[in-house]
View 1 (cartoon, rainbow, N blue to C red):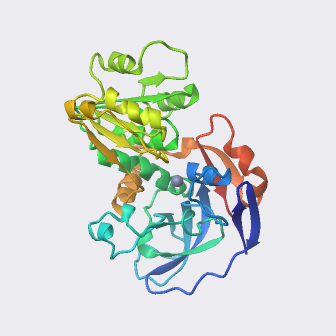
View 2: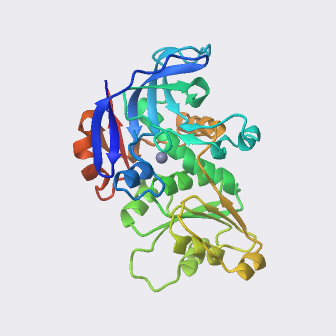
View 3: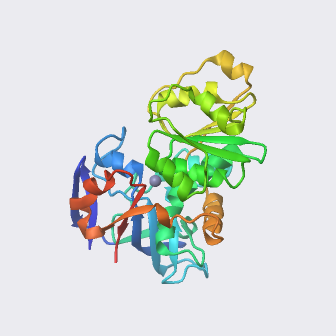
Length: 342
Ligand SMILES: [Zn+2]
């Protein structure tokens, strides 16, 4: 059986996959059927991911099917389709003992720190598989990416009194907006690409968007006040990973506001401490997601509160990934590409 390995930036190769290890107690052997392509994969492919090591089998947004199980969970019968929580944590770590498995000190993320899902089969611990009837295999492949947005929103704890502004409408920002909308009184989305903002309005039903790509002399704070009638956002989720945008959140936030950094910037972000204190701001990081977030996202998909299928703008057969990956992921306006295995 073949797997696809990213041997160095811009070079995918097929190679023989090592046979799956024997199942230990609680292990499950799964067949990979869908792989969502993430910004992390794209950065790794183009060599823009600092600290990334090659060769690596990518793929952490996975829709899989159970083949064989050494676990006695009746939900995980052969043939059951599942989403994968790709964050393999050490249960004994301090963060894991406190329930924060998403930011375990010894975390191994499939497809990032260890080989991931661009291969026909994987062996995973049963508790990292999440299943729910009525969710199809395409939707399962998008659960992980939605969980990133959902966990950012959990960190920000929006309430009906909140005016939440999401800055950056890539897949993570769109996930943040989609879940924030279920809790905050008002949600607005800011981006520099009108096509993404159109997706927010049309597919997510969020009418309030700000296009910062247009030459516009009105400062963003004024445009955000226009949307609310006068208030500044009491919750800002920055999903840009851009240091300037992240630093500007301190000025844009309302007094007593909360800022969640969902995007990662590889360097220092500085802020004006008197502004931070005068406004009594809270600043929060967010990383990955927990098993609970997987459950709540799958409940939201199952109940129809969120439908990720319109996010899929391209499908690539597994066999064609080495040839088609670069052209597919750079398609203008694309939100999510999915790799398909039979
Ligand atoms: Zn991802």
